[in-house]
Every structure is written in C-alpha cells, then in structure tokens.
Length: 304
Image (cartoon, rainbow, N blue to C red; front, side, top):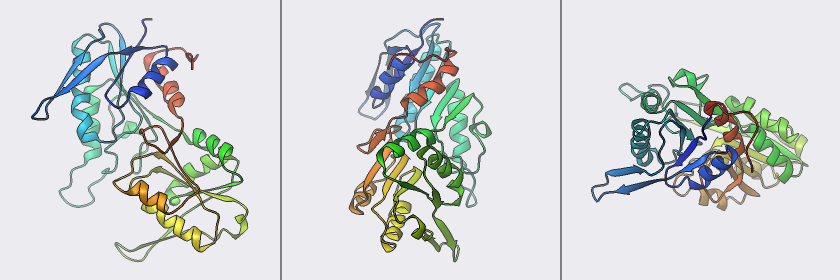
C-alpha cells in the first residue's frame, strides 16, 4: 500500500506533522493566498494522485476555515486522490441540532451535509452530541468520534492529588464518571434547578464528605466559561480547595480565559484539539489511532 498524505490547513501544522509521524505518512505541501477582496486561492504542491489523503483542520473559526477546506478537498479529488478524509479535532456547528424557535436554520444538519459531500470520511474528538446518539445521525460518510476521557483521566491522575471529578450537569454524568474511573476518583455533577423559562440556578452538592480532595471541574467545551465560573463560586462558598478546570476543546470566547484565570483556579488545562496556551493534555495519539482504520493501515503505530 502506498504511503498516505497529510495536508494541513494553516494553523494546523503541528498537529499535522505529529499525525504524519504517528501514521508513517507523507506531509503534503500546499499553499493558500487571500486576495484583497478576501477570496481564497488554494494550491496543492504534493501530487495526491492514486494516494489516500487526509486534511487536518480544526474548526475553531469555521466561517474562516470552511471555504479553504472545501476548495482543498475538491482540488485533491480533482487531482486524482483515491479518497480524501478530514481530521477535524474540533468539529463546529453541532450546537443547533433542533429548531429552538420557528424559522431557525438547522445548522448541524446543513453543515454535516456540506462536509459529507466534500470528503470521504471524518475523524473528530468528543463532538457535542447533545440530541444525536452518534455522528451517523447527521453525517452520510464514515465518521469516528474519538473519546478522550481516558486521556483526560490519566492526566488528572498524574497531576492532581486526590481529585474529585465534577461534571457540568446531569447529562454529562456518564462522561464525567468515565474520566473519574480512569483518574481513580469519585465523581459528582453540578445540579441545575429551573425556576422559570430563563431562570436556572446551578449548584454543587455538599462536598463535606470530600473535603480532603481537590475539585476538578471537567467539561467538553470551554467557551464562555460561565458554567465553570459559577461552579468555582459555589466551591468558594463551601471553602473547598481551588479547583482544576479541565476541558476538551479550548474554544474560549473573547475574555473567557482571562475571566477564568481571574477566578484563581489551581490550573486551567485543555487538550490540544484547538491550539491554545492552556493545552496540557495530548490527544493526538488517540486521533492517529482512529485515523489508521480509515486509511486502511495496520494497528501498529508509527514512530513517536
């Protein structure tokens, strides 16, 4: 079998290079140019003819990334690539999975349709599957959702003395418990009491039985950080130890990271699905393991 090729869109070079190393793949060369009117030109400099290829593109700013991604995928198909996969460590447009108000766009399905037409397979990490049971509910291509609770739990077990895992809500309990199991720690979740259509009170159960443990707030996406900030406030009220704040995807809306730092947690740590100064948990090997099957490679990993 010929060696696969990894093409990385700008900003994804570090992840792409590591994936290429782990998969024994060739690093594909490409260039992009933005014209004064903001249109984008993509040029492929490594011939993909008769090769299995994948594009690496995390979708932190999807409206800026998607057009170059579509142009690149179409170009690779046009130049004779056997199949074009997409490795998107962070997958955008999963929030709007139903019409919450009349006339709203169902963007999760629309975006999935666009990507399903553009690429032949997809690998992503911990997508926000709130009302979907799996990616197959919305994507028409083979799609793998990599679970990294084990990676996060292992990191916590190494970095935190006597941790207590705290999930953001009841819906997260199963995921938080899987993190806790790997970390060898007990687990609880934030409770939410709805007092009206827009009035929701969040609280943390009494942690008296775990006073000797370090709270670890875990969530799949840290965007506005409001959930974690509220939880830190409740922990202060219980005179708990400063918590570790751990997230999968470091989305961080404007000002969110600074606000979280100002709350003085013991640590803010995220995985490297989105490049950010808080990245401390490496999940690229887990992504590579999932990509191997799509490439049709053996299970033996490449060099690290």
